[in-house]
Image (tube, rainbow, N blue to C red; front, side, top):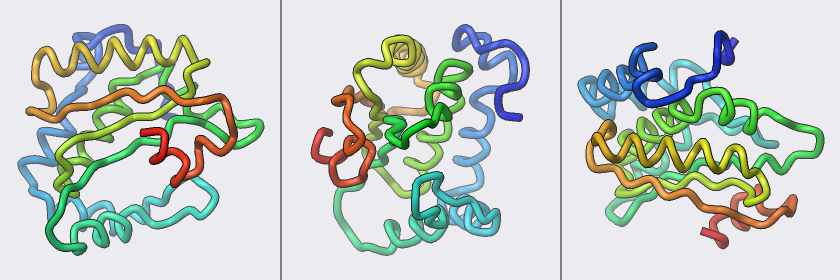
Length: 165
């Protein structure tokens, strides 16, 4: 259902399909409303633990003062999976918009999206999308950094991923 229609070819194409509106809606609603909506939705992480996203965001926001960063794990380390690459090939802008919303909701000063260096097609699509998004300031002044990691299963594990970043 997420991959309906032709792949998104550019930021202009993404915006013509309504891209960017979710971020604008999130900012207008405010951080508390976004976290409440995500919590109510029951959204869970797609990793092994399936941890509730709203609970994670609430915990981050309640951790007190300090620097915060948002990280998107697109390393696809689980054997036999192809979910991350399929999404990134079809619409990297949507993935980045989701990362921008998460960053806004938790008050992150920067965001990172990490994938394996060998995923050349996805890396190219992500790099181009980030460049286009930042050139027009679609997600305000959020800086998104693309991190390329090793071709190892452990790269997808949270602590190993953060070590590479």
